[in-house]
Image 1 (tube, one colour):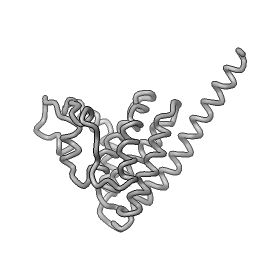
Image 2 (image 1 turned 60 degrees about the vertical axis):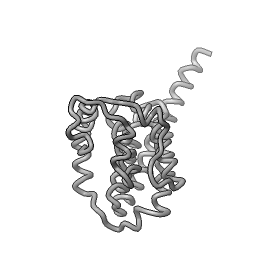
Image 3 (image 1 turned 180 degrees about the vertical axis):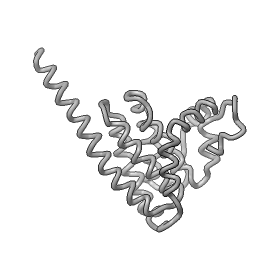
Length: 190
């Protein structure tokens, strides 16, 4: 949020924000897009799955800083609009920020960082699926994991991985339930 200070009424680019985060860029990307997936209405939140897969896959393979295509990095958006969106998620962010702090950092780097990336790819795939509960639980789990990486909090990584398992099961179950309902409905007309 501090990266948007002094930008009132201006346009900023995604690239400016990510480069401003430095080494914590992966965590920042997971926080932003995970939060947007969690708080956006169904359908809109699903759009966040694609950038989440992009950034999570980079984390899984070990890129030190997030890379994005130039067309995305140069994409401008309103700093005021971004601040309003962040404010909508402030309640959740505050709860996580209070808990997140550097500890057991060996659980937030190295192989665990790759594991978090792979888990976030799976969660982002669930976010791409249509249906209720396919955005919110995975988005919340990704946001928690993003904070864990940004703060180098190994304990929060473990909690985030537990949340990720729950989110994956809930999201996938919701998608399967919708698919079965559609199949049954379509079967009535065939």
